[in-house]
Image 1: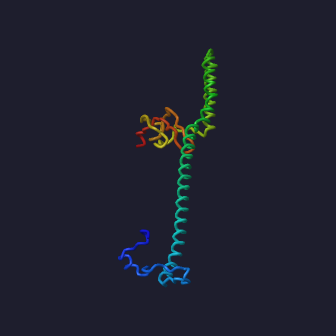
Image 2 (image 1 turned 90 degrees about the horizontal axis):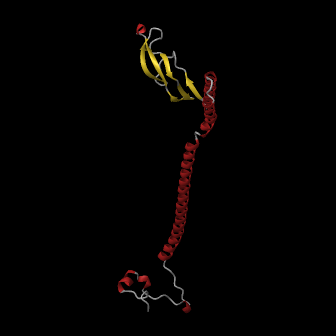
Image 3 (image 1 turned 120 degrees about the horizontal axis):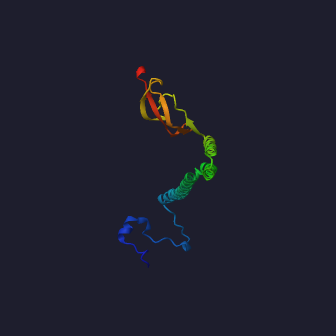
Length: 198
């Protein structure tokens, strides 16, 4: 007799149905399970099937979650790389457009014999730069005579003047530029203070 077959008296008291050894099928006697045991088996079978189904569904959802997390992580890394590449090469077109201007400056400096020709060469280069800025949608901000606007103007000094209305731009020291509605640099200006109008 093995250990599994040996039962203590206490176990037998708790489980009276299994006090007797099972019937031998060769005797022609078929042991009928009690109604409680049959009901337990019927309940257990659907519960086991439902439990297996829930476990399979859970595993499927965990697998899907892991795949989605990996996919999102790959997307985030790919997006960060694309943004870094964009930042690195965003100015490439503008720099490429500036190369002919630099070449023309080099030619002007190399052939600076006659002052009049040199001046005309620099004027052509200036025009070339203006055309380039226009091509890049960089617009100059008109300031002289305009009402002072702190969004577009940086006041260098206030100058008393009776000729220009109060708080209007008297003189532009350096032009301001913008791309569409975004300010690149404010215009550096002198602002009139007209004491007659105060």
